[in-house]
Amino acid sequence: MVTVHRYVLETVSTWHGLTINMAKVLEILETALASVYDLERLPDVLRRVLGVYVGIIVARKTNDIIIALIIARFGSFVIKAKFQGVRSLQDLAAIQVARSIRNNLVLLEQLPITNVTKKVVTKFIETA
Picture 1 (cartoon, one colour):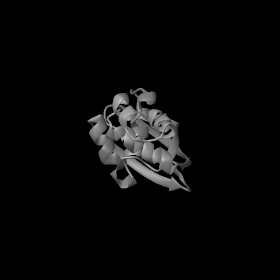
Picture 2: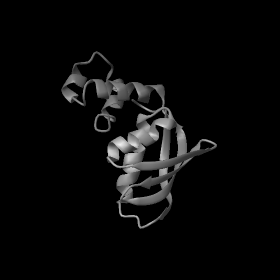
Picture 3: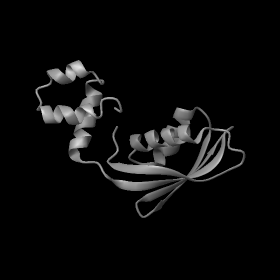
Picture 4: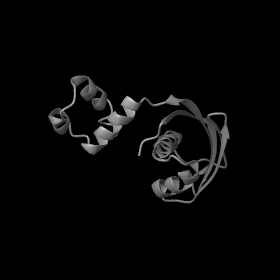
């Protein structure tokens, strides 16, 4: 599933003996945000990915999101997801094509699409 909105994540604060790599948490959170349309599902996605209890408070401030996380055995922190804009329809379509061909460049070359479109799909091959 692809999100229409793009966010840039930044750590606002950490506390309670944080024992987890924040870069890894930001990467997981970014992936989780990209996989949910409804923020109410975010805690379930994080629990599934991390495999531990995740307490979460999500608050919207304009288009930005403030996320307070308590992750069992790892600590607590606040992250701000700054709204960066909306993906273009071309990007959304390219992401779906990249996923449907399972990142296979050989299959991409066989598709009856223009070279310009193939170039756009290629930029999502590794990230899909």
